[in-house]
Image (cartoon, rainbow, N blue to C red):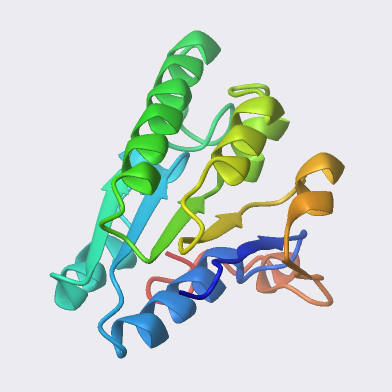
Length: 176
């Protein structure tokens, strides 16, 4: 049995969730079982919500969040986001400990920590207590140093140029 890795995709550039989904696509080709828990994006519709169904039964998507916190159309009090993020931690622990999955992706969990919705200690506990064979992927900007230190692989996405700088809005299939 090969030891599972802890992988972090972080940074201000685009592509963190996309990198995790690419990893899931590759792993499903080897019949690995993957679960992705979305901590922030839950109330919005994203292409991956539909495309992930095409990878079933090897891929399970669990959208838990209420949408991005404090921006665009968010009218929920922070307490609501905190409650849901804590529920996402509980679900994450159940999925990780179930031993049904080879890979568990915790999408936007770094944002949830940075926004104070969950405690960094909860994330460290998930990492330290995961079964040895499980690969754990954490996405989102602002990965905390304590988490980076215990990870096996950390990739930082760096924005060089972005279409938003030209006033180009998010594009279906590219951005969501």
